[in-house]
Amino acid sequence: MKKYAEDIIKMTVRELSARLSEGEISAAEAVTAYTRRMEEADGEIGAYLTVTPQTALKRAGEIDSRRAAGEKLPPLAGVPAGIKDNICTKGVRTTCASRMLDNFIAPYSATVVTRLEEEGCITLGKLNMDEFAMGSSNENSAYKLVKNPVNPERVPGGSSGGAAAAVAANEAAFALGSDTGGSIRQPASFCGVVGMKPTYGTVSRYGLIAFASSLDQIGPLTRTVYDSAMVMNAICGCDKLDSTSVRHSVTDFTADIGREVKGLKIALPKEFFGEGISPQVKKCVLDAAKFYESEGAEVDEISLESLKTALPAYYVISSAEASSNLARFDGIRYGYRSAEFDGIEELYKNSRSEGFGREVKRRIMLGTYVLSAGYYDAYYKKALQVRTLIMRDFEETFKRCDIILSPTAPTTAYKFGEKSDPMEMYLGDVCTVPVSIAGVPAISLPCGADSDGLPVGVQLISAAFGEPLLYRTAYALECGMKGTGAGI
Image (tube, rainbow, N blue to C red; front, side):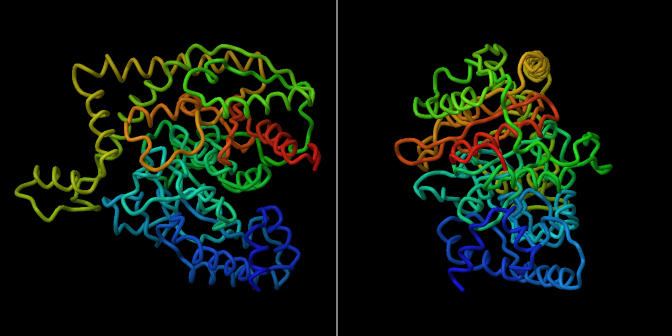
């Protein structure tokens, strides 16, 4: 049985879906295999904050009964998944990896969770993260570190570090994370998995505990490109509960997968390959560019001057929105309340000082500062103007090319404690932040490894609602890396 269980947890979503559909594997067997894997591995990895094995088995039994009765079920029916702990799941503890929400039980489910449940997907538990999604290494969780399954001495990336690690360690068939400035793509790069940040508004944010509302977006972390497209099919779509949700015509993100990339125009912005980019990372990404050339794509170097301003604009905008969004956590209505206070003002101060971690407090203070009288115009308003310029720059670029190719992160996964300076940590987002500022989609997938065997991720970026093209282009590279060709 152990070998059989090992086979199950190594299957892609696509493979597992087919086996479940054909009756070769039951949903209960799949859940049991993953539960055992979590029991064996997660003490070392630390990917999960809350696990729900009994609920998962009950759900699996219901799926198996429906299938046995001859009901035709959706592709994800019976597939076990993990959910980042800032995405509400009804009746399940949802903490954002913060003491502030230590005992918060979500009274409702996020739209993405509801949609997965409607597809028959089974939730295994809630995944560790940087507190309130603020961080790039998963060292900011209030509970425990997440370790990179490739090398446990290295960080998994953040803030969706638990989601990336769970997929890489075979503790979930796939996971849902959130991406504000790279929080899906960067951990995907560090852990050697596939991470998709959809176009802003493509996936509902209802039920996602907000960090920066104009930037946050939910997306999948998977082992393969095709798996990512399958999950996107389930979670995307307009939602009346989310005012930023948009209508779009894509109904099947797998439709273009397998088409050739010949004739595509791929751009390499020189700003993504300059100072601070590891030579080994640069080589792997340029090798990916050479692969596309060998397949008949046109690859050209370009310049995107506005990229230089993206990082400071991002940290002004995101911190301002964090300051506003996190104001609700005051120790009165819900969340952590200090036991020591004398009056309402001290209750606020002590509850927030004790309930929030260092990085969250740093960003709240920065955000409050840039929104304050006398500084709003100098910082926040100016950052919004820079954002507009960046969006226009991307729009103009995509009139001349189909895809932008870049590193996902400047380096591979670093050791715990190696980046103690906040500014050094923030600079690690230099490749992912511009995409979030512009609101366009991007996917990260493995494109090699450095001399220490640590994964290198390549980032593919397209115009808004260009996810089908991203999946087509990413799949070709993924097949090329395996030496199997681009056809299905």
